[in-house]
Image (cartoon, rainbow, N blue to C red; front, top):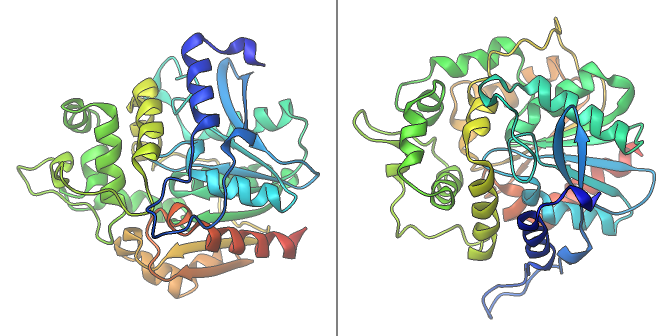
Length: 346
């Protein structure tokens, strides 16, 4: 499928597959080797767009990783390698308008439904009948709603950072105080102007730093979200400048137009499912210091077990000290949780 690649994409694919993940301070020891050169990169035409799909591993048991924002397939690099080493075939697409996948002709009309339909097309093209779905952040919606719309194709669902949220709860995101980042990004204009002052790498860096914290990013009335991070603010200790360069390069290509539409301007999307109930086995992994838990009612919704009204077979696990990027922060622990879940249901 490499005939789809331009020269620039060929160079970027080479950069990704030769990228070293072993750049750690001398006093620290990298927990496990991550041979990025073993990850394969496919480009396939699905629903009129060229989609980038990263893949590693073989075997009948397939795990699909669905990234969050501001992420791409690369955010799952540790899990892909870890699960592939344990005998699973792992796949991680870039959504339309993200990473190396094509942007839709009208990004302002992109939907979660597009992601779900794209995923179905990718699995059909790869002749994969059934999968486990692992979604992070915005990936929660396509993971769960794929399972609801195509139950014959879903073996189980794992989400990180966000639980299943029925429409009546999701829409409440639009009622948050004005200074919270979600409120600032809901409508076109302000976010575009805020991001437009900076290059894509800096925008990504600022969002990553903000989302790594334990408090919801909130600006004052005359302050922008990007101003909440000073240029001297260090990256989180688990995230290297090399990692930042990968994300920066890919967001330089894709921009943020589609990424702002899905998720932030699609919370009220109608999935056409009344009284949703997910019947497959499921797991929620939450970092104890994930800022998402500070959204009004979120922690109670999870801790009270109300979420199990919609996902009755849900197991909930908290990771001490875990942030919103728990899969990059504590890769071995998250890999172990995933493998334990998969062992129960394969």
